[in-house]
Image (tube, rainbow over the protein chains, first blue to last red):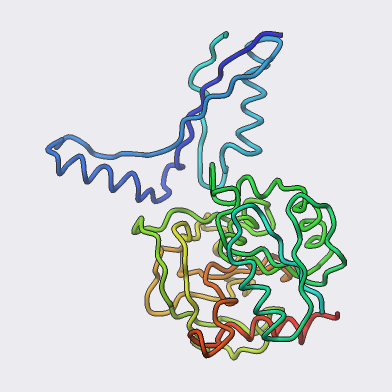
Amino acid sequence: MTQYRVSVEIKPREGILDPQGKAVADALRTLGFAGVSDVHVGRYVVVDADATNEGGARDSVSAMCKKLLANPVIEDFAITRVETL
Amino acid sequence: MKFGIVRFPGSNCDTDAYHAVVDTIGEEAVYLWHKDHDLQDVDVVILPGGFAYGDYLRAGAIARFSPIMTDVIAHAKRGGPVLAICNGFQVACEAGLLPGALMRNAGLQYICEPVRLRVETTESLFSSNYSTGQIVRFPIAHGEGRYTADDATLDELESKNRVIFRYHGVNPNGSARDIAGIVNEAGNVLGIMPHPERVVDPLVGGDDGLAIFSSLLARVPA
């Protein structure tokens, strides 16, 4: 078994109203960042877990996302990074 | 009739629910600890408001996997009534007892105020003692009450008369189609963001919530 650090990005699904993202976008524009067209605010989760290989670590965290970490009704998730610890 | 009120760490409307059942309609109520696997032979389960598990991750996401929830889900699958209020509604959605999800209020603020609701149908376990189209006043107290579901689900809810309560006049949180309370397909689980248990006594702001409890009494064989 190897210990892996798996990073997951969870954000509101496309097309679902994200008032938090809108508020942040408005604030950025107010601050003079005129080029901002959209902002999405989500969560970043880092899981340290043992697995036999990288594929196993990914599969396991993917299952965690489907069961608990993300709500498929409103959120999408993506594994953004897998490191060996 | 015996009501069971689930207590999660962070539940804070459990005693209001108890008061509504015991002191107002004069029925029996027990608290059900989230770590237990015992529903104590209750007829109706109440998932009360609050911030179960601090609403960490998402409101209801962790509470949904509490040991007692296995039994609550089994009770619901058997047709047992479940009244899921506010945070309880969020837990019920996360548990798959009800479709959709409750997201951050459109205005981003936590809102604690009385709102007006329209009773959409009296053809439910929870609303038979109202009249159709009746306007009632319940308080809301939530930051994440914006009911969200895909269009197919919303159409299904509407066509099957599963929207029991709708915000009237003002939609406080941006809920899809002004939805405030829905039932599951079998009709035995009600999820409602406003708080009926806080309006059961004219002394503290009205008794419009009482008919939810009395409807249950009238319809559920104890």
